[in-house]
Length: 116
Image (cartoon, rainbow, N blue to C red; front, top):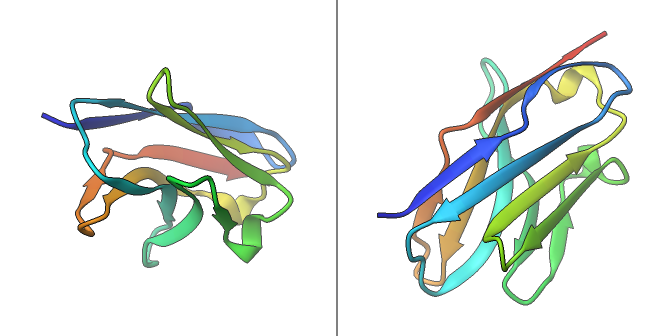
């Protein structure tokens, strides 16, 4: 059974930093992309950052230069380093793994709250 478990969320002041982690367990075959999404209250879930199996990285314009996505294949863990956080970054952050067959695995989410 595949599980994605996020950690590292919390409350931080504007300008602060957090590092999110997403640990995977179980077997996931034919991974295409790993990524982080977020959903703020009353808004749709949006892509924050993604890294393909080939290492190509994409960021939402709103986080470019502030967030960094990385992975540790040996630990089967995906990270999101978030610096210079802003109140508009407040959301539930979800880890995602998409296979080549476009099947999505999701974590349970971790809350990030940035106070002004």
